[in-house]
Length: 105
Image (cartoon, rainbow, N blue to C red; front, side, top):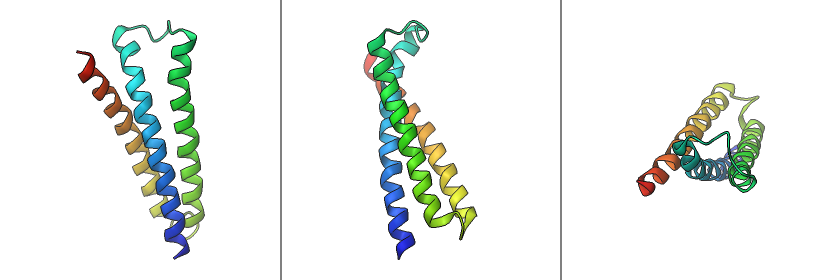
């Protein structure tokens, strides 16, 4: 029962990190599309940096919480869930980018 509670807490953290990465993808679409990623002003750096760094921190926390439940007892499940989180992060960023570009054009 304790492992499922810990997995549930890790899932909540993972969902939060996916939301932050989706937000990052949503905000990165405009400067990426305009080709000015290296010419961002300070406000744009903050708008991009906060969801990116927050998403990385929360995903890292989710992996650590998940490690408490599964890393020692069943490392295959831990690595499978970590890989699923990585794929989810990539899909969240691409989902945010596609959502934003659909509303720009």
